[in-house]
Length: 87
Image: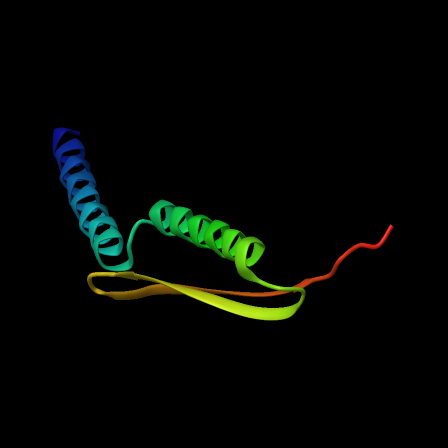
């Protein structure tokens, strides 16, 4: 019985090490999904502010590219149309 418990404990430690290495590798090379999502939200807010402040009426296309030291992270594009409302 003791041999069975020790064998299972060693297997559990091995699994924990593998899971730790895989998850560390994913976050290191792919980036943290929470950080990427917050960057996407910030890019959308920036596009909205730019559109509101600078664009005349009509249909427009805008894009913003978010970059890190390693290179481009993602690109957010925006197609919008501004019209005046007549009362």
